[in-house]
Length: 186
Image 1 (spheres, rainbow, N blue to C red):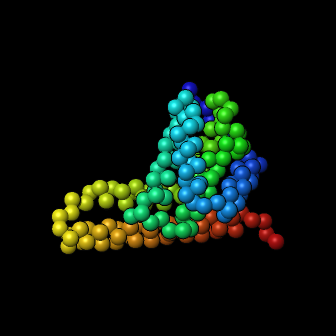
Image 2: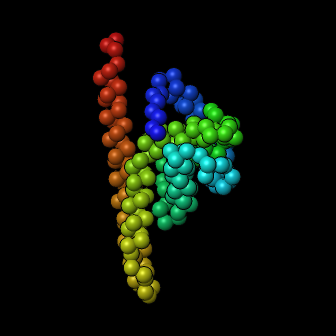
């Protein structure tokens, strides 16, 4: 069965307010505490008995945690803050729908994940490409070969970081132009 629903502007506003609370938690918490809380939530929440849509979004949380902890990826601070905000929301048991409410307790988390994953999709795509490139590297032999492979991976990372930033800026410009075009004349 497929159930579809539409979020109205007021609904989206409630999610934005909840996200602002998460943003304040990020500002006052240590990154490792936020990541630990997200890992704890992944381990303790009843994700296995949640509907498939929710389970799939929760798998994305695990990937985001891995991305933050991947030293070779070295996610820049601006993008790190966005991911941390998402994890702070996810790990809050008293968000819009308390997580312990049977069946639907994780629905708001899945919706928020969907909204935010759309915003950071270029980051997620770049990281997936980075992991593929890293996995395709041959095993390093001696010191010189290991250094050459590390440099090649670093160049790949920098190229992907630059690409994700360009795409984000381009989308922001398009959104601003669309907003300006629909704004009432003053």
